[in-house]
Length: 572
Image (tube, rainbow, N blue to C red):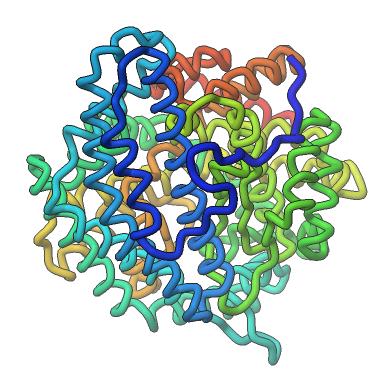
């Protein structure tokens, strides 16, 4: 099938053409119309669904742009106020109407005449929303949305000085690749000390979020926020017990490989003992990989790389560049991290990241490009709700792209030796990321199963879980004051709770996609695009199957896929 990146922004038919959201009073009449409209036939119902979808897309995009603008400039109070206004004044008033409209759909006699295969996951999601809706949770959810954005404001101000210059923590990361071990240790400690300066505000912020989240779970009839969140995220296909099985499988099947990778790195560097500031270093005389100089070069080279894989992929980034839907360079006052922000009306999403000329920035870019391609491929689906795909599938889109593109990284590197080093870096990261995924996920389970814990208990249990997944090949002695708070660098804990196990599940799916690509590149890319084009219109196992992979994170599957990656690493 031929796909095109020349997508058009959805036109308004129900809302005015140039509708702008400035206050609730101008939006509410459209909800009242939907609430009061008579539905006398299947055709009426389908039109009502389209109009509801239009208003959903508009609201979603409006909220997303407020977040994008605020994270691009955390020091601009006007942008922060616009974001807060939406989540404190608009979103809370939308929620009761959304519940009324959901109930109207479920009880409508014509709903059973809809194509049940096409609408199954959508209607399942609607029923889930009805089950979870509680009036008393509206203010708590609004307050949480505003609170969790404070993480970006705090972290965005973190800077360190080195060689007489100021650097964001992302930019300072490049010094950890220096061949001078003293420089590496100095900068590692500066970054860690800078994080420790804000440990109390971040602990306080996290405590407030836990309290509100726990109450949301209780209000909805759950024992804790974890169980509520599993339901809210639509985790219909696995349970907390499966996550615990995943944690144990990582210990058994992945940790020995992680130890091996770091043992080999220790030998390469000629060290007696590896310390955490040595993990990204190269042996003396070997320059760190610098795949690009700045955001513009990163974009140009990424487009060239994606063109080689499939011209449609390159076209997606070209379209985003044409629309100014990219902010790639790291700078002071910009929120940390990286994301692809879907824009429900525009179709072409927004990529945000903090590039600092490092190898990890290249993988972040192609990762977010994978997410972006998912947005393009699902844009033509009829309803906004059809485009709400499971996060476990969204991460397959991004992590597969990291692996698919590797053979075309010659656009970033001058010679075969650099290519090999880049591929080795990537494949080692595919393996070494699993322990951190298991650590963050297991910590979240403990946090929300024990919501009234003290700060001391939080620290003790973080260190306990961290030690379970820490390699024996790195010497962490004397670093406990830094390690005690190292969870604070993970923005997901603050901003998107329980969104992390997906990276582990999807990494397995991505390795499966890459294994398929190694056997038949054309067929694998066809399956990839077909699976992504379905959006959220099928169950999670069915979406994986449509892409030619298994939804399986059993110990046996993990073992099989780790063995495949290990063999690929050995060829380098």
